[in-house]
Image (cartoon, rainbow, N blue to C red; front, side, top):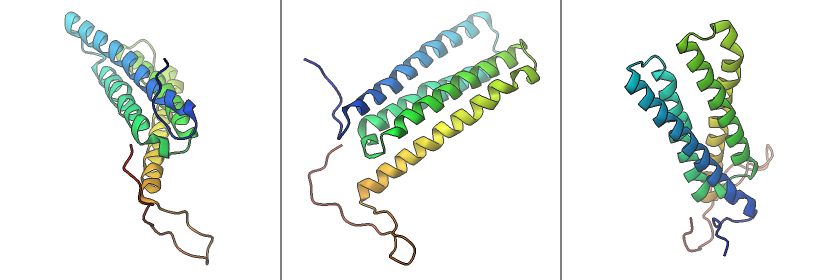
Length: 166
């Protein structure tokens, strides 16, 4: 018997929460190991990078996975994919750059390309996530798209009476 998350429409959307959880799990395993190594060596030079990994990698990815597992099916199917790719490329580049910078392995000039990819990647990933959240909210409230200029206004309509579903 195969078990999948229940989704409306494309069953392929069921994989995105699992991918977010898998990425979060990898990041927390790295983060815990990193934290342990810092505490054993009493060298906390890279603690800002460690904190960013735990927050953006572990916490944020897990929350995104929870959203896409519950309410995310109400957002367009391309959003979880874009969110996942942008955020994870951003995390890997940003944390690598921060670590190399704090360890003094590379100069700031040498690290700039990683920051140039990492920072905007994370920001764009979070922007896509925000769009997914607000799209799901609008759809759950039954908000219709705005009509062309001069035709009408954006308005909320009551959704049809159906049992609550997540």
